[in-house]
Image 1 (cartoon, rainbow, N blue to C red):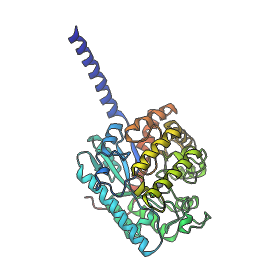
Image 2 (image 1 turned 90 degrees about the horizontal axis):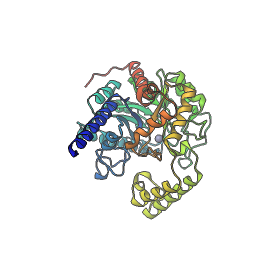
Image 3 (image 1 turned 90 degrees about the vertical axis):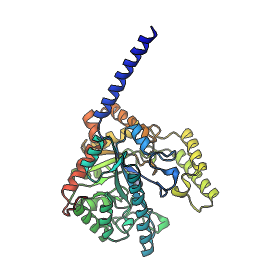
Image 4 (image 1 turned 30 degrees about the horizontal axis):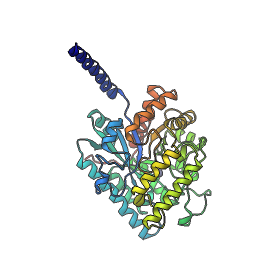
Amino acid sequence: MNVFRTLGQALALALVLGGTARAEQDRPITLDTHVDIPFAYMHDPRFDAAHSDLLKVDLDKMKQGGLDAAFFIVYVEQGPLTPAGYAHAVVEAQTKYDDIALMIKRYPDRIGLATTPDQVRANRAAGKLSAMIGVENGYSLGHDLANLDKAYAHGARYVGLAHMGHNDLCTSSTPEADLGDPPLSDAGISDFGRSVVKRANQLGIMVDVSHSSDACVRDVLALSTSPIIASHSSSRALLNHPRNLSDDLLRAIAAKGGVIQAVAVGTYLKYDGGRELAEKALQAQVAHAAGHKAFDAEKDGYLPAYVEGMKRIDAAFPLPTVDDFARHIRHMVDVAGVDHVGIASDFDGGGGLADWNDATQTRNVTAALRRQGFSDADIAKLWSGNLLRVWGEVTERATVHHVAG
Ligand SMILES: [Zn+2]
């Protein structure tokens, strides 16, 4: 009886789909605190927010993988601490604010800007994705505190003080000899950096210490009147890399009520010297072929020769897995407590694992957290509960009150 079999199959399918829809509604909000965008975002059709074969995060991939919310990053590379350098950085940051605004303007039914934790929850309830804005490298403030107020007005809700290379706010965890940086010392935050932290506290912008030197992190912990975050850093006890945080600093950030967002960058999770050499060789080769002095991720990172070369490297030297990532999260939770750890991909900025290599594979992270023994309640905190709590506290402690709209 063909028709009954078909009907039976249809009923089974309806049950499965109904169950999936319910599970989808019940699962916690998934929030990624670090997603980069290229400078040609929304202008070059290859980098359209809705769908891009070259980007690890787009609206289709977020929807498919169940990633609800992401901080899109206004990143500017470290350059000279000169008036011309500052002016250039301010212009570059503006490009990224404009591009994020364009994404929201072009796809208003699919994604909404969230400038409060409640907006993230409301977007999720309305079946919409959330875009938040984070600043990576306070250099893009152009050494002018008024630009922090402008960043807030654009919707930025965290400010990462440094990137690679010391800047006018603080010392970096990775000094750049090319920029003339002295090696790491006890030097941490500058007077301008202090004024940025103070103003961020007043405005209700989270201060982000990922990429800051240990000395700077300690200065910020002493200075900030609100909890702080590390938007994308993993555990230095498990992998000794300056971009990761020591157990002492994990404890100190937690003691201040903050959150550390473990990051899915392979080189911060598991050492693979062969892969590192192969990547450097490919970068040199691609840059040389393109006629550039040094590899530039922005210009060279999307060239077919690089994309294809990285596929060969991924096959020869597999990236760490979500289980390697979950081991860092487990250690960070053991040290800092389950209320003080979260999740960041650093997609399109160097992040990606063998089995979380774009937003479609976000559920693999949840599965790895289960394998690490985390409960549903823990997983909800790790995926968004902790970050939203800290964001809410930072907002409540703000002393400058803005008129909505
Ligand atoms: Zn970064």
